[in-house]
Image 1 (cartoon, rainbow, N blue to C red):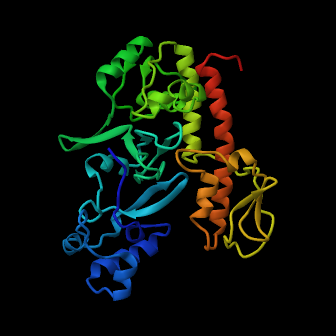
Image 2: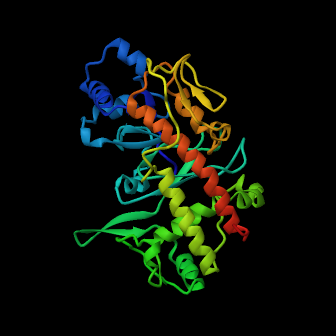
Image 3: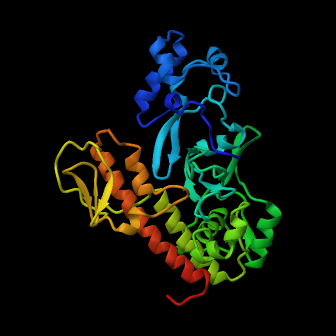
Length: 351
């Protein structure tokens, strides 16, 4: 299922919870100024009857949820399935849960070779991975939630026939609902956990050799993943895939990223340029220790190190923003390393 299309990002998406809440409250108050109507395009279109939907909507702050808007750029969205343009609620409702992750993958590539995959732990935008034509991303949650006799069940979102076939090939049994995620260091206990299979897939999709070998197929359809048959190779790829997943979710990052921000100043983003391992945001302030490879590192249709700053040009960064950008650079550097380590395992090279 596709990611969310809000229909009016300027209204329903924001970096700040309170700002978003105030704007949507105003929208649904029925007392709109001509300036508000003009600024936010509060009009119907042929594909989106916004005015009609507004009449049937009541503001609820609980509908403001974290939103994977762009690569490493989480925001908030007012996720009202009856108000925004396309919520795809039947699938994306499962991504509202804390205990879930999703693969965001483009089905086709129109401009770049395949690099169009990232992991998210919340509701995601259709253009999270790319804004290029045909490269809008689809969302594949690891789990779906169902009610059974008054209780909620979490079930692996897997084709059971294929899942069983993979498990048998590895001499494992299946587990369609692993409420307790097992630490790899503790062993699998003879069970192929869905999270392990997810991490295996995530690792394979980041192998440069896999991307090169299947690049013509990857341009026209969803990725196809080779079935694992070698237990040790599978285990090692799962380990690297788990490390990459946590890295991309920015979980457990070190306090020191190796990226400094030495100069005091306004914190206003007047520019974004790289020069001799520095990324300048204005004439005086810069991030120090940014390699050119991180500055020019692609994920999907974006250069995350550049895109994040581009979307904040003219704004004043907070200290949390500075720390977040340092983490983005750290993640990109570590991604480059992990992709090579994954490739060594995938093609059977000695490390």
